[in-house]
Length: 277
Image 1: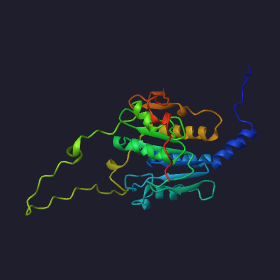
Image 2: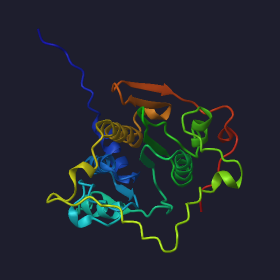
Image 3: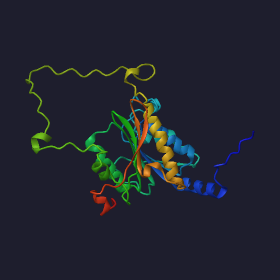
Image 4: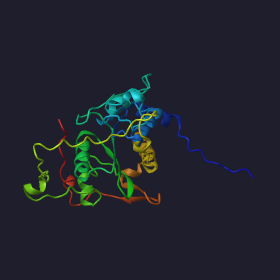
């Protein structure tokens, strides 16, 4: 018995349209841990027109995805040298942290166990600079992809705060709460404290126990983020992250989605923040 199959391959006109959209699209990857590098490689293979890279953290001996010669460089600089295809198919651009990158279609923000007081402000800054922001955030319980954030309508970082989906910055009361505890005074003639020991490098480049261990769930979230970017850029169907957050549980690997809409108490429903200029 011969089974009948239905082809899902798009027609030539649709293929040409999607190809043109890929070549014209600009994606910014903010955060170049192994998953960020993997996402960048996938987007280049897919044929994205312009890829911007942002991460001012220095490359260390534990960053085994970079060559030894890149140690001490900013990750964005090292990654742009490592990933640039050199044939003009994708333009790879290094973006300094804090700089405003114009013309970005999708801004991918990757954070692993971020500081609560920084994540909200980072997402707000990204939304002011880019048309659409896609967060990939991991904490002790799960990896969370999305939802898509935008200053042009729809969800914003403040919506996530109102929904309880972003950790709020810790509250402080008075100057005493903000000031760090004073260190105990040492006598003037006391011997200097010993320097902290540093792990000795091995023939492979560093102490293996101090190397950055890959997070398989982050890799999976990164692959899924690239897929969602592809759907957004091609524009042939709605992307799941436009209305939901995709969640992968660390303990079980169980995947779920949480439908999210703009919060009725959020100011984004009645006001739009001005673009950074």
